[in-house]
Image (cartoon, rainbow, N blue to C red; front, top):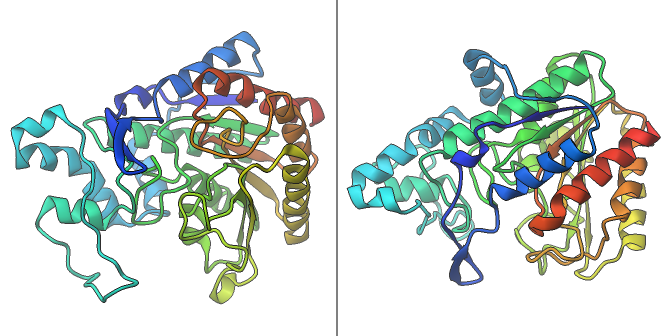
Length: 353
């Protein structure tokens, strides 16, 4: 298994985030990736590579998933933030005002000139700080996902996009949940365009990856499946319920499997089997796994109780699908354990493949 890792990830290093009503140090930190990379060097599974995608090709791949108005905003956001007040260079940008589409109508065709308004327009929470290196880091992550998809299209059994910031909460035109570009969606779209007629995305992160299904919700060629904490009590709250099945031509091609806080591995594993059966019934030719490790019992912002050894079995079960598979690195905030847990999952996949 080749791992494509993002050499620009540490350019995105938030100072603080809003968490449960107060400012706290960011949970999503560069050490998350560094621990995984160190564990892959200690227990190698294959080559460790950096992406070599040219800018024009990367821009096209991003543009097939994300709206141009949104990516243009992200590309220039930091400069605008500092232009508002030079002192802003010493603090990250966090949104503070949002349009509430469920409460009153708002103009989607008008882009406010005020930066703070646009920052809110393109985000859904106040816990995802944006800084000088965010755009470069996010683009580097998209390049990892694209290289991993190309590797699988070229005949590899699997490939791993090891990058941060993560991606599965990012929609076509919004960021949040620490995510700015949706790496899993970029990989899935690349697999489709590379000849796979049907692609499944099976998200195993504790938090519902709300961005991915919003991108594919009305499509029948990409199945989105997610096992996650029940949105009645768990972030991101407003999507991820079991009755969300897709819409239009995509009706029936979205499956949510919400589980209560405190769920242990036996129950979680049963949900995984149901998810894999849905992938098989769909007839997918390739699989993308947004690989969240925040299902771990020691995770500080999550609530399942999987143990490190359980991730071997998770990888083995995923390998049982028998599909070429792209893994994207998502959540996992028990930083000291995230490397062990990630490599356990990948090693389980490898030995069962």
